[in-house]
Image 1 (cartoon, rainbow, N blue to C red):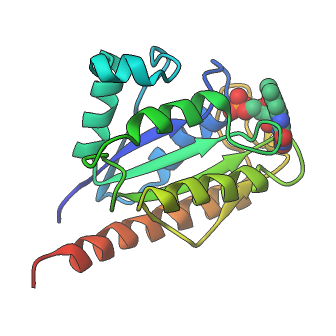
Image 2: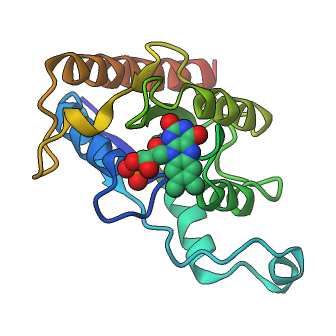
Length: 189
Ligand SMILES: Cc1cc2nc3c(=O)[nH]c(=O)nc-3n(C[C@H](O)[C@H](O)[C@H](O)COP(=O)(O)O)c2cc1C
């Protein structure tokens, strides 16, 4: 059985980020055939086309290459002001440029968490729209919105809510199938 290499992107840089905890949870609940590594993007500068024309900044080049190598990308993000956190959008903007942008045809899964009641539902659809433009292959279902998330993780960052654990586990199993399906679809006849 092949192992799918999954790169995680967290929309929050906060040390105690719930979404970072969600990525850890997803990594734990992934089927045996998947492996998660969370990519760091703290050093990615604000997008500047002039700077891009001079050459990709090393953190951007490294992230693009990491995504290119991966079998899938898992994004866990909060919602900021009903939409995509600026830092994450900036990272996507850097990654998105050029004919060789690595999100094209890349399987992507999205999960959002918020202390609020709707669990980042609004950012999810904005992110899906952006991924659509980039030709990413976004897993449609199950959608996972973790509302009231602050109460669902203990101080050590472990998810204590069985329903959340089940949803995230189900999504990871579906993501494995999705990656396998995209691979079959793209295989030469
Ligand atoms: C600038 C900003 C805007 C926010 N806007 C929203 C929002 O629109 N919807 C929401 O549910 N939570 C919003 N929040 C609260 C975040 O969901 C909350 O801070 C969450 O814990 C951040 O995710 P993290 O724990 O992964 O860092 C906002 C927080 C910040 C800092």
